[in-house]
Length: 304
Image (cartoon, rainbow, N blue to C red; front, side, top):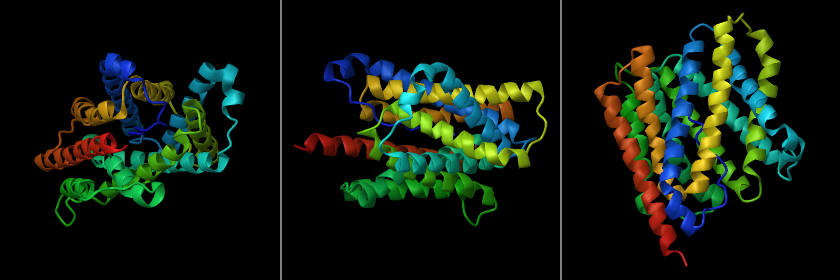
């Protein structure tokens, strides 16, 4: 799942931004490839195993990978003055993962990924009441058009309408709230602290539930769960690197490369090819998202 948000690191210096923008874009594309790889593994596993078991594996092995990498600093990283918000944010990510992985069981991966691209638009909509930011009519128009794109993909009332398509839609909403909570933490918390809490809470909660849904896993299944955790960790690392090396306005539009990876994965591994309406809806969502990023950049330039 496109758990494609990370706390914003300190903005790069102008010199760094100019010299490393290309590297930042490359890291963002790598991050999207990692997230789609994780989602593809999950889609394959939920065919034969419980979503609860797959979500557990995704978080458990991410914790294992982080523990190995960060062990000398782990205790210090878990110290936070914002424990309540960290837990709420981590719970939102867990709910998003569960909804999205469940949706992948029934919905083509490219379609689910396109709907999840609504999350940045949700952030824009929620930034007014929660972050007290000002959103002008042009950006509001972009939000409305983006949601129209999602409706083109889902086609409510049409023959192609599946109730399961609502799962990635709700996941996009919860992921948007998750990203807003991430913004609250980005000014006062280490990126690694926030990443550790996300993985740890997910693993702890799912470990209490997974015994009731457990089915035996072959060696290949264990290997796939391990790879899912590794891809999730690497994806977040690449995301952090992208935002560290280049301004958000430069790299954020490349989150939409996720759709290219998802379409390729769906075609190569699942025999899925998006229909014409999915392409149209995805184009509308991408266009509205890029336009909102552009307007945010314009507004920031005008600020004193």
